[in-house]
Image 1 (cartoon, rainbow, N blue to C red):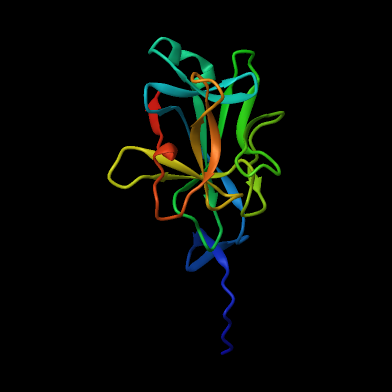
Image 2 (cartoon, helix red, strand yellow):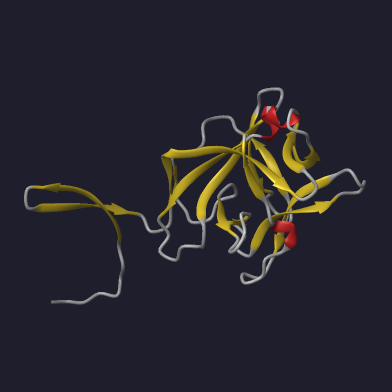
Length: 195
């Protein structure tokens, strides 16, 4: 019997009488979980909520009535992570609809280490992503001992969605920030609230 150090990812598929069948999976991809999409508001300290304003992602102070608007209700679509060296957390894509009814997904900006953008979504979210790093896939991690989360980029593995003050005191923008794996940066802590 020959031994091999090569691993193969498989998923249980079906049992037929005495035979068991497995489905072969690619080892570095994401597959959309069709029944695992939920809508949440993303809140940071001081009653500020993540909103899309045209194509800009920023945190705004909101009251309960203002939170009913579509621009702060994020769809969190889960993806099955078939990567052998899995990251902590659940693979997700965040999307939101603006007041003008354009849907955007949260993405890392190309070439900008700290940039995050609201990329217009011209078609539905992908069912399959054939690589282990993608501009819109983040790993949603629960911060131990809290009811807060943080979102690690799959594209820039040591970076997390964070917030930082803009040029004027009212503007708090969404950015990517490099954070050591075992450190929880206060500016990357976010709460997910029911809409």
